[in-house]
Image 1 (cartoon, rainbow, N blue to C red):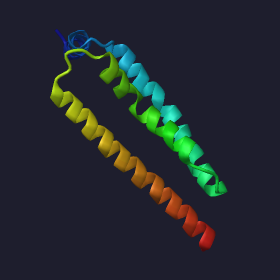
Image 2: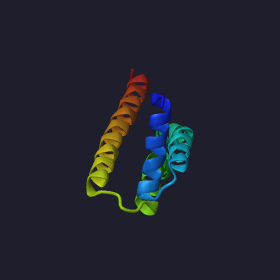
Image 3: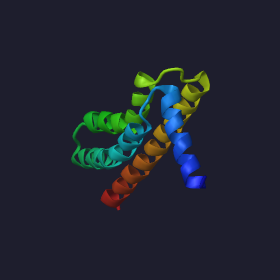
Length: 114
């Protein structure tokens, strides 16, 4: 069996083991990327205009966690450490996103003041 076939079989078996469709998880994960990116753009645009950033921040947050929400809602027999890894990834992703948005906003402020 080729490595690609072994990886595919492992991936599919994870879905069976945890009660989720791995293809659907992957589609949600990849499909959310453009919406997340658009939400960040919306957030920056609203910040520049002095408009509330709450709605775009909520939108970005939702698209960031959408695949993991599917896993946590639809999954069965998911070991506790998987939740720990997911929470860790979410925390790191939130921190990373916050840092990137903060850098962009600070850059925007510098451009407006300088």
